[in-house]
Image 1 (tube, rainbow, N blue to C red):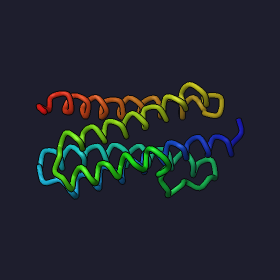
Image 2: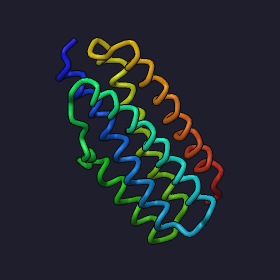
Image 3: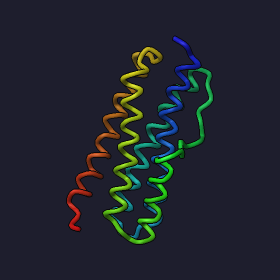
Length: 151
């Protein structure tokens, strides 16, 4: 197993969790409704936990965890849409933007689980599958709330 490649794969997941943390921290600071503040804080906490587990694996390999976010292309615009929607107090727009960001997070995890397993130990694969389940659960909650919103 190529340690450098393993660190790279794990850092990709750290980045997507950094994106989620940043997006949900922004959302929970800007929004007024306490229920949404609490929910967004929970989602940020999911990614804090995932990030901690991933960085622990990276340190075990002698690597350096990334501190950055992906913030490129569409994903950057999504979180900017969240901020704009929050400014306008449009909860449904916030949920739509969050769902799009969650779609990106899920795709990142799926890509790792489908394309990068040879670079991960069995324990790392299990860890990533568990995190994927948590993020999918958050996605489902966002989608359900968005679907329940009356236009």
